[in-house]
Length: 74
Image 1 (tube, rainbow, N blue to C red):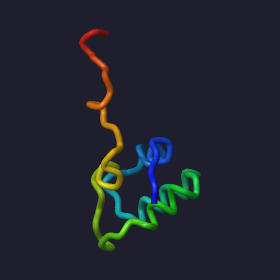
Image 2 (image 1 turned 90 degrees about the vertical axis):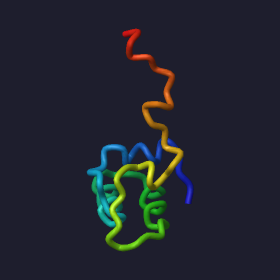
Image 3 (image 1 turned 60 degrees about the horizontal axis):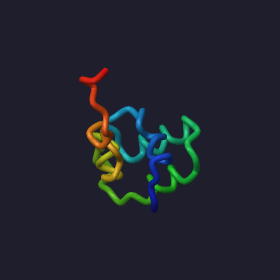
């Protein structure tokens, strides 16, 4: 299982919180690459566990805090 920013971006608009099966269904319906579905299938979890954000699936996913953007300047 590997994640890249491009692959993880396909889940950024997913209906959070979501279970593993809901995320797989979402990825298939939105036409995400096969690698996204395979990565989701490789996750070991409880059947009813819901993920709140993509950071729970891929902790390295960048948040708004990771970008050097100063909103006060604009």
